[in-house]
Image (cartoon, rainbow, N blue to C red; front, side, top):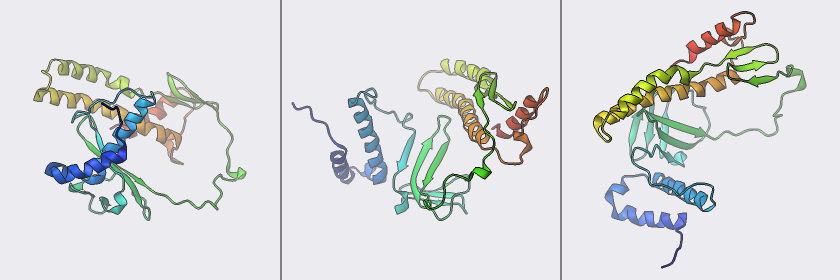
Length: 252
């Protein structure tokens, strides 16, 4: 018995023969299946390099995403006007476009993600061509005075000029609700329909708190100019007032 590993190219050849023999497998897009093999190959490479543990078999519920690595060939198309996205072997799916899609750029990858609360998201990455002849850094005349930033626990951000942003503590605010839902989930029989419903109810506040954190970082780093809700109001209660105005905007 020889201990010989199977490379990614060899698995792709085996996949081609399996597509011809298995009708149910043939309903899957070929590049989506190849992307799954590519993930498996990366997992085993990391294991042999002793960077990760041994790859475990993914359950149906645990496999949270699949990707179209080359959507520019027609396997995935976004129709922003009709709020539809075309996915090969699936069809046209109605979506909610929350951000303007850049025009004149090629779609590079399309990843469909299943969140723990049961909602689906499409992550689209576009190629952007930059003119390297243009200067990347602005001139010294447009630079502002440097500001020191300190990250803490009671205050999320404290700057050297006296500006403070109170920590929103999204997870702390959702802990009581999550604790009650966790107790209800533990009392359900594993694998039952009620257990699945309880698990989805628990995943909703966890997903919301994570999404609030993700939206907090870019809006804090790059606040829109002239927006009073991001202006740091100095004086007693000024930071709290500014933070309350900010939380009302990002709450989901």
